[in-house]
Length: 86
Picture 1: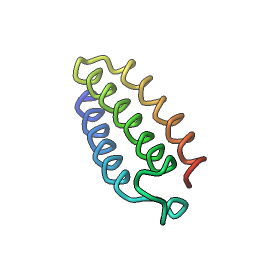
Picture 2: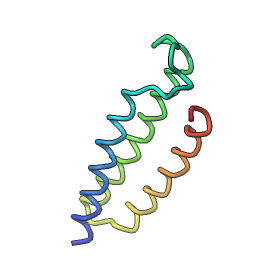
Picture 3: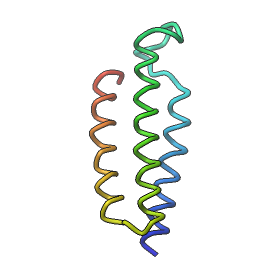
């Protein structure tokens, strides 16, 4: 039960991250798509998506404590990129 709930939550997070990646924050509006800032913004979402994928893999293997630990890293990634671009 816990494994399925975690997988569902992670899948929703992944979908949300991919969707959010497509919208530039106000701070980056007007910047060229190939600018360093926009590339870094997209890189942040690639890092986050990779972390979510890793947590999903762990959850699928039934390694719930490890998946939760990986999920804690999302907060650090989010914090780092929110500071830069929010």
